[in-house]
Length: 403
Image (tube, rainbow, N blue to C red; front, top):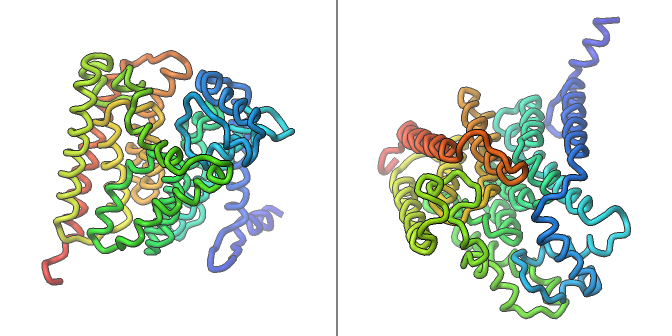
């Protein structure tokens, strides 16, 4: 009897060249169950952002008629693009559940979209479904991912999930599909551009063509269609990101609970001077990194691509002023993927997520036991570790000129 049960559990099943066992199925179901239970436990948490922004926005959309019609609403202030406002507008007229739960359900759905992307990337790299499922579960258990949507009702996982699928297709050497998904991510959130330098480097390496970058404006314009149908002007819709980039709503602090350089020099001193200087420092740092990564001849493998992506994104959030605690979520999810490429680097996702989650605890729990500057130093050390690894990766994959 025992042997029969063990035989069933280890029985291999193949579906379209993907092989897994009954134990893999059970592992998948258990991790999914735990992820859902954890999110269910957070269902009634109401964060300040919901009361201050989302609830009034949804009420305004409802008053305007909801659905596509609701997008004609006039807001005193809103910094979301049409795709997410469309979701909120349909939520406003949904007769099932309340607004808060529906918003959380949308984010939770994309938690799983992102988790499946991680599973796909890890499986494609390792050809081991157990590792793929563990990557899926790890993404769902990450504190920043869990609390972002299920607790906070934020939507950062939406654009993040599309970026992950973009990376998947890039690793599969399908640049058109990759940039299409990256364009969809851009249509949802400006923070997608934190990873843009990586795609420029990939273009320099011949992995992407210039025409593929047209997916960014194309997907943004396609995303505008519901609001255009509702009567909004084209300029009003494309100016959303200009308003965000201007940073006027965030000017009261150089860092919004994120462990970046401003936690070392002061988050509320020389607001305008440091903000202006910080933008140029960020651009300068990115240009230096992009120059170093683009000028050398080397083979761009999956590990190096992820390391570069993490370093470039960390550089942006470390130096750019007015960063919120949620803005390193791209780094968090890439770190989860990376550890399945090199298990010796388990410290990378652990420390990265620890630094990110520190800001979450300050906002959601109004509590931080360790001073934020400690996390800043730790974050900087991780950046240096990524820089060292990128240099080593380029040296290991060096290609002789003319080869």
